[in-house]
Image 1: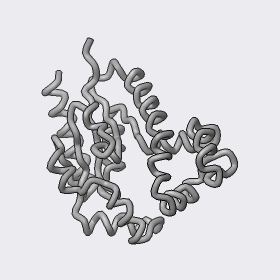
Image 2: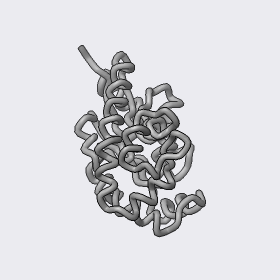
Image 3: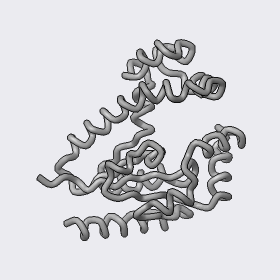
Length: 198
């Protein structure tokens, strides 16, 4: 039995990955979003709340995980990240497996995973697409959101595989300088993958 072609999408913060994923969805491609999955796990009654409450009780507020408090804990405790990942990664994996089962009849699906290479999820993909832009564009986009300081951005970037390495390992690269150009590239790639794997 054939299964859908799994295209993994990744890209460092501010590189246009989320916009690229949205454009695939607009073309009718089922998209699994790792970040949205984590948000759901952290929300009130989410599957991660109870196990995380046992490890980080101070990070729980009103029955949900308070991301800002959690971020503060992660910055102050070097061991906290691995404890967090031991709870969250299996739950995220289960959600991804459920998505794959639901979309087993589709010809092409997109797995939007920020830490695709860092978590080894690229091994579950048939090909990898990296969304990218120059480092100046990246920095300007992130800081323009007004939710992060330069120091916080540096901390995030230090945990992510460098953009140049992601591009080197990718099967496909899309530069996300303008929306229309990105949309054109997404459409071209969908057409290419469908013709190759028809």
